[in-house]
Amino acid sequence: MLRDITLGQYYRTESIIHKLDPRVKIIGTFVFLIAIFMVNNALGYAIAGLFLAMNIKLSNVPVKFIFRGMKSIFFLLMISIVFNLFLTPGTPILTVWKIKITKEGLKIAVKMAIRLVFLITGSSLMTLTTTPNNLTDGLESVLKPLKIVHVPVHEISMMMSIALRFIPILLEETDKIMKAQMARCADFESGSIINRAKNMVPLLVPLFISAFRRAMDLAMAMEARCYRGGEGRTKMKPLIYKKRDMLAYLVLGLFLVVCIIFGRILF
Amino acid sequence: MSIILDHINYIYDEDTAMAHPALIDVNIKIENGEFIGLIGHTGSGKSTLIQHMNGLVKPTSGAVYFDGKDISDPDFDRKALRAKVGLVFQYPEHQLFETDCFKDVCFGPKNLGLSQKEVELRAYEALKQVGFDDDYFYQSPFDLSGGQKRRVAIAGVLAMKPEILILDEPTAGLDPKGREDILGLIKSLHDEMGITIILVSHSMDDVADYVDRIIVMNKGKVAFDDIPKEVFRHRKELEEIGLAAPQVTYVMQELKAAGFDVDVDVTTLDEAKNEILRAFSK
Image 1 (cartoon, one colour):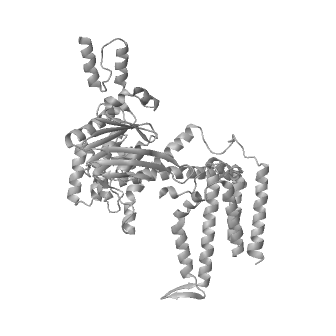
Image 2 (image 1 turned 180 degrees about the horizontal axis):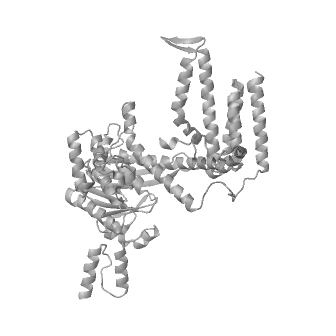
């Protein structure tokens, strides 16, 4: 069950997407997000979907692996669909007792579902193809302009990369703790919602303690190596744009233009 | 009570690029009252193996029988199985969560649906069995030393009255004194209460003194499964898979090579002492 969460994980393989500069991937993901919230019709979604499929194909990450991550947001997806479906006012197309499904509701529900799926798939593709280190470097570089207004860019990206790095570690830990408690006949799967929440205590307490301990150890290790923020820090491998990155930007720009023209203006 | 592992295969991360076999065709039979040492290098599959025994992990293929019944059967009571096959994990930090030790030990029996009185009785008994001091009963488990934490963790499983107790590296991270204490405690659980013990370790020295059967795992396969003496005869093979015979066997080898007439098959310190004394008195 826990192994299904792919958010923030890196999938090691060789591909053109893996080789791209992290800045391209971060900006690309951002552009993709803008695109899917801009487009307003089926053709637009089809274009976005096609673009996403092309990227997945190029990335060499198995489709199965990407969609395993979907399972964990299934609940969220369902909530969004149900609420939009039943609570949107408009022309009813189906009425059962007091519950109405409206044409507008159906439209919004489908739209939201597609957007959510695309959003998660797109952003997990970025983390799956970028190592946490690269991601931090990229993020720091992309956010650099904000330094002028005194945003602690380096610190933010460092925190983010640590958080990302800790996701798989804590997942593994959760798995171990769960097993240790199940060996003492703990039950995590049945009972009412309140009972289930109560049953999480034996899982959460060891997990939190371990997370705090790890955080403390990490802080100490960083301090021992004289880490004191981004001031004057240089990089061993500075990010340099290559030809393929420029090409990727070009493709991205084209994609955004096509999306806006066909997905919003023309139809 | 017996556990039979019948042609167990287990593959990690099946259907991803990271798929790799953790267990390959494992066949083991565990009888009532045995004291078994399960030895293997890190990543040899020993932890995965023991999780099959109480149904925490489902084999990719093959079957596990407890007392002649297939544990993957839909109407098999896995909760009862976990009470009968107690599994103590390597790090006590993974299971301690309550505000005091006594409450923590109560967790297992409470999950079995026993009455409050019975739960507390069992918890008290278990804490006494592991030689836990009364003074610490109502202390937070997080303030204890490594050895004491481990005792509480073992008591937490013992309180469910298991018939088979599996301990995953119970001595990892302990100093020599703490190590000996815990191993002695495990031995007394076996000798006095008749609990079947499976002791998982990567150190031969840990187990040689105590167990009467050794199972050696290597790369997901059972490499040896025999009495200690027989297993230690394969010194070369053991070294090849990153393990070693207990130190005393090496001492005896050297003595033999130096011209003393000693039996090189001894495995425990006591046996070695007697053997050396015998050789010298000749």
